[in-house]
Length: 252
Image (cartoon, rainbow, N blue to C red; front, side):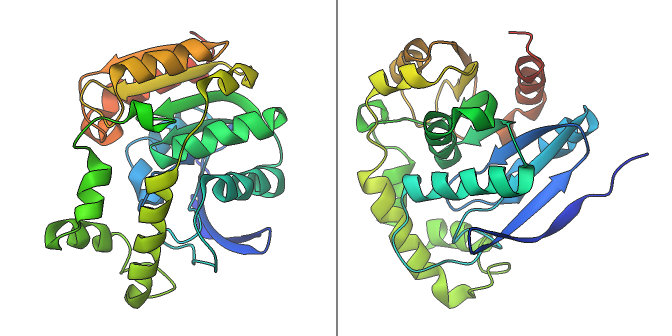
């Protein structure tokens, strides 16, 4: 019998957090990118659920349905929130799949709480400024403009419990974070013992050289490069989903 999807709020470490849960089985937690939310994974969550996984899709503070809280955004704080979610809601180890900002969060969780991790997938992200492509999305975000702001607000204004008037606050916090983070020494990745798939598009926001260096720095790292951009899970879901299933099943 198919299990009904659960879309609701949970209290995690004092933070009212929106999450979606699909299916039953071994847990997989999908971590969305900056300015995104659970809907970012619309092409992956149902496929994983139908393949025998319990798919959790939490939304981070100040993103989509989850309210903002006072203080700056940092990847470290978001990683702490995710650890609390794994402890409180998932109830133990899970596969983590992070895309863009979510990949940084997933990697930090792997470093801080390896006991909560089975396998790790990192999609389309650099981990220090040496891996950024020139003329990337962060420059586009800083430039702003009506088209960029309209796109970002389309995913925020209709669902945020803080209301559309709060978007400029979230926007400023995000710009500050991505201007200064992440700056991880790739040597620190040696502490991540979990099997890890580093996945990116050939025209992504991260250089191919950086992606290869990240995979090489991980003791059980593997690299996959597909034709595509930073929107790889949306552009090419059939191939991305097949790769995720292959890797999460331990067939690497």
